[in-house]
Length: 187
Image (cartoon, rainbow, N blue to C red; front, side):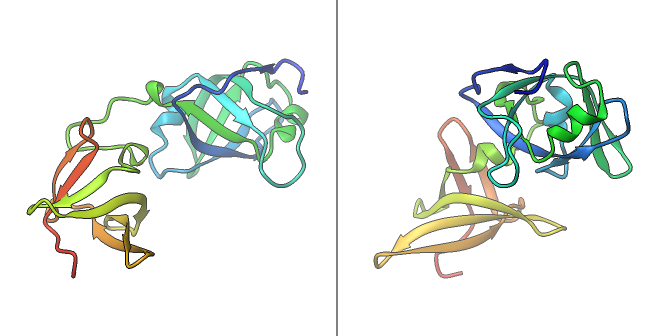
């Protein structure tokens, strides 16, 4: 186990938000590869939960708590420092670690803004009430985000792509776990 890092329970609402890429400098800072173009969750939480990479060398097992001192953007990437990591060697030993943050520590989104993780699994219906499927994932295509909708037809799993823009999305009801769209099944 890494000195200073304590075993922890992964919170029930934990969301994977990035990975540690490598050490940065000689004072224990490390580079982070966020899973989002807007890594606010990394900046808002001071408690990161680390799990080893699924592949590659494993320098620890289970879940470890990392108490973040500072996380900031630097030259198009994210760099961070933690209380338990005070030298380059320790930072290097975290390379590849998966970073999880409790969903409850995410900043509150503005009106008509949603975290992707909150949209996955929602049922998608059109204005006529026809169920089009459920959100399996989202894709960032540059100018817009696209909902990848999974549905079943004739015993097969198929997908629909619906742009997540106001021209097609009428309403997102997180409480009801439903997205209403102006879309037809044959589009």
